Length: 631
Image 1 (tube, rainbow, N blue to C red):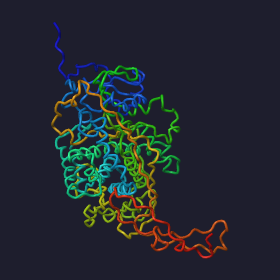
Image 2 (image 1 turned 45 degrees about the vertical axis):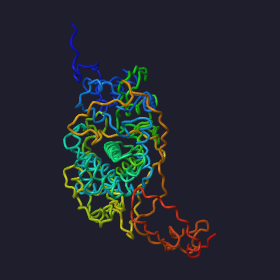
Image 3 (image 1 turned 120 degrees about the vertical axis):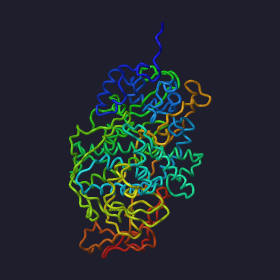
Image 4 (image 1 turned 90 degrees about the vertical axis):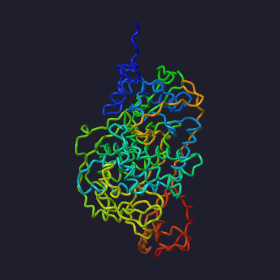
């Protein structure tokens, strides 16, 4: 007599007994888990995604590149997942928020993926990085001001988890109250471990309202750019694209900021930079992408036919999880000396291939600005607990500390506007203290209103504050927070530089879940295979190369008003003949007052086209210092 088969979803169903759980490959001991799996299985290891659900974890650097670059063998479309189609994966599985099929840019391959990806690439390429950085600086300064006088803070819940959503949301035209609602909606959407909770559909409702407003009143923001893009056919596709961009960028950038702050505060090679050392924020950002990439494990690819990978037989319908952190640690490509990695950006933190992240440049800009602003604005900052006692978020996908408690010398927020350097938030556009320094102008050009000092701490609670208590996000249509009015004088404090050049090929950068795509409290319907596809799906079309154009820009002039003319040089008779005195600052455009830099126009849309460079001033308008004769 034959024993009945176990029901689908039962832990006894399948062959997962003794396999390593996926969640252990993203925790604090992940490196030891990778070493053990590599020693036992090689570059492709059999793992347990959840009880009763097997899968493959790709550990090898070259193997990850193979999987991400061969769409005709390894599909991104979850409708090819055999265990999902056969009922092995439960309808309420915690895997589905990350792995269920979605009708968006992530869930398609081939020409359909290219069509949905182009609007994202075009929107990012058209962003003005200088204005974006000012916006992020203003967000960071407002958050720091809320707790800098306290002397203690949690840099994850009060800072790193808040900055990306406010900054990215602002790029899509969210106003201050909408940004506050979005934070609370995300907290309602995701419970512990990233599992959906009731009430999360509010996230989608907020973004739908922004979309309707921009449809009626287009602005210079990413939502309007998506609505106008010919490759997005209707508002539903626009909404799904906005959700992907905001959701994917939030969790991963949070982890990047938190892990970089941790490295800067604990590693002597970087901590020394705070006291004159050689390694700084750029090097720390790169090392985190190698050692602790925001997405330690990235789901997923599905085999379209039987094949072999890393010496293992992969069956049609098998699921493969990309071990990005494990691939970065592959001894076949990783040198043993960490100093050999300086300047090396060949990591796979952003994945590779057709589904590469289109937003590497703005992600780095947000992370770098957040780290620099925190280290500059919190004097004598240090961890308040030993590094080995830091708690880590329990997630099979992201690698991020659950909290980062720090202590520092309290800052008198009433005086930071007149101070600069370590220990104070510099007086620069978007970083002044007080309500006036954090004013908000609506996209329609309404008069600014101030945000009360000290309210950003409630924003960091992600849903515990009222919308009015939100610090300014980064609105776009002539409404970047902290922007100085025309004619205002700048303190001349330097702005942190950007290093967009030399980034690796684009890579995938999703979040722990994608809000609004799988409604809370309702399991997704039985997946339908693509039209005309067999059990493992029809071969997808080829993927065209997707070069990622990284925008570059000229150096940034002083924002907000003019600077005083340079002091006249002493008589030439007192100067060495080979070193004539420098002439005063010339006008940036013909006809402007000599010796003064004209105030730029009020900060407008992030997507505004850059003006053509102004012609140099005629020689007749260049006064020379006394006693000096131009050659």
